[in-house]
Image (cartoon, rainbow, N blue to C red; front, side, top):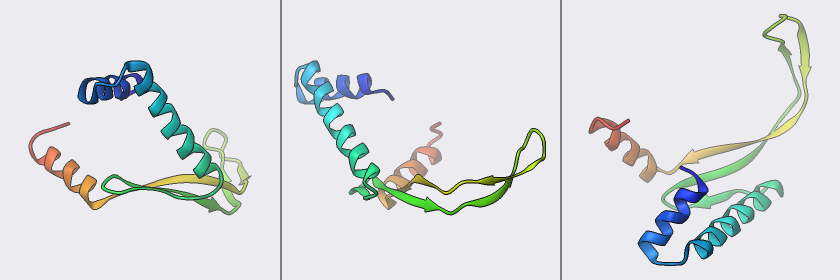
Length: 98
């Protein structure tokens, strides 16, 4: 699903003009990005939680050459779906969904 598809759905279900729907989506996504960049979590009840996790440096291996290398410390985003979302996905899978 794309931003344009989300805007179309808002347009169809709520009746907002497409431009306003696109603006709302941009505001929500920009707010989420800024919050995550600051290291804070974003929790959307009934959907899930986005967290920023710090990974420590570690030894790794270049898959092409097999050479050992140092993988630097970094921050990554993780997503933990809510139980509601998990059960919806399981139900959809049980009904032959893709």
